[in-house]
Length: 458
Ligand code: 5AD
Ligand code: SF4
Image (cartoon, rainbow, N blue to C red; front, side):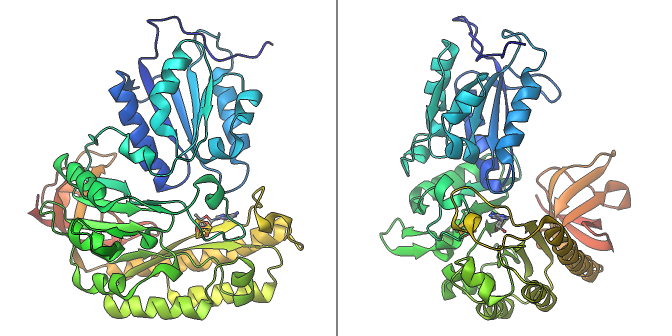
């Protein structure tokens, strides 16, 4: 069977519909939305659910295992059995695009565009070229250029992501991010305030500030005074209609007393902190180049809890880092026991090409990793359940984010980022974007059930 090559679209036959498929982290969700907005600006529209799109953007993630392989099989599935004219135009974006670059074009002749996470503002030009039958790869890293060239926000949703900081200079030995997302940059204060106001004008009531090291954000404010993330949060909190602020993901070494204090005195800053630690043994943390100890991490969490006693804690863990012994893994379990996370993510170590850990001695066998992951997840699930159970009987605000599957059913988030199910029949009424006062009446492993008391404020 001959391979499908990039579709040759005659002039006047530019793609009319698009679909962006996001993989990986929230930053990809943000980037995916912005790519969608650019395509809207070029006269395309999002393909309705369940319908084929003329242009598919695969917004990829490279952080763990076989991401690239999955993309190639996805591409195969989209073009299989289709003639060149019927196959969608395909763009590969995101971190796999950055890591593999033009190699993708060679391996997958049906791909028309390859665009890295720092270059996607050039997507419209690339699309124009692709429509004429050309193919283009752009994996430049022109730092800040991207954001200033993107069109204004026009999404409508009660919750929104806002990328404030990108890239990473930490070089943890297992991680590809410093290579795929580049050096740490902070977006300018004024630009962020403008984008946040725009998001609020189109209906956002909660904004989550995003960055690979979001708490490393810094820059001069509009009066020229140097600010850290807490300064930005305090200014955002002054936007009247904005009711909730969150941020992720943080690094333990970038916390400042000011940011800890913000958790005590900025009401709109939600009581939730995602703070990865990765491992509980100091030797492993050193080999990971984390530059902090387990004890230092725990002391930081104590300070956080002192500032905001009800803060819900979340983290990331890697099991089976090269050389991790059983005793060292057990230190991770002990750390989990000590913290009692409200939720946490855990992953098997995945060697990433080009990172220092990939060539370290003593790579851990798969069955040992499987066993450790299972044991760690059992503890995390236990604590998550206990956290949810402990919220039963509490009354809190829930921001309604979407409809449930059943008539009259709504899904929202508690201040502690729990998913809360509400049923209109159980009292009160709700609508998308409402902040509803809710009593939590029942807990499950991954969500809680609430009863609406009254619409607190719309
Ligand atoms: N293998 C497994 N997990 C990883 N992460 C990052 N790199 C790797 C890797 N090579 C995890 C870390 C990080 C999260 C986003 O992904 O826990 O915090
Ligand atoms: Fe990766 Fe470490 Fe940077 Fe996080 S801090 S993005 S884990 S290198």
